[in-house]
Length: 87
Image 1: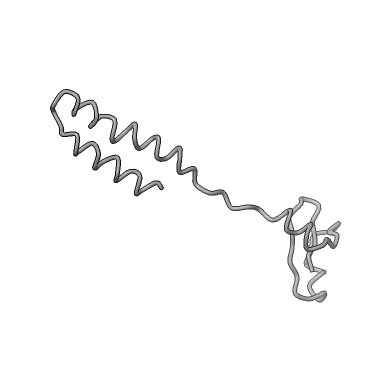
Image 2: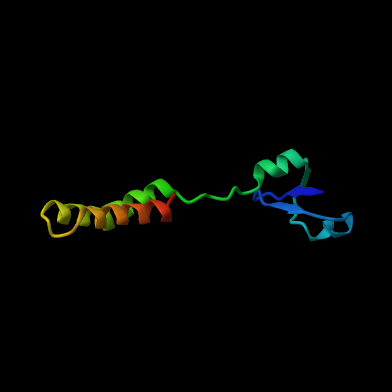
């Protein structure tokens, strides 16, 4: 059974025996309503993480390679490392 408390928290009970533990004003809700109220996990924003890593790590190597102070292969290796880290 699912119950929604006045503060919109959802309580899952295996038995009616525990209803006395619910906050005052709780109402029984359906499975669909309980699922809609369940917090959804936030996925990491890999695109933003990859963009920040390129700016902080690979861009400086790129500009060094343009001045022949680093090799293009060093830059490409760093780009590949970042892409592997943040797919």
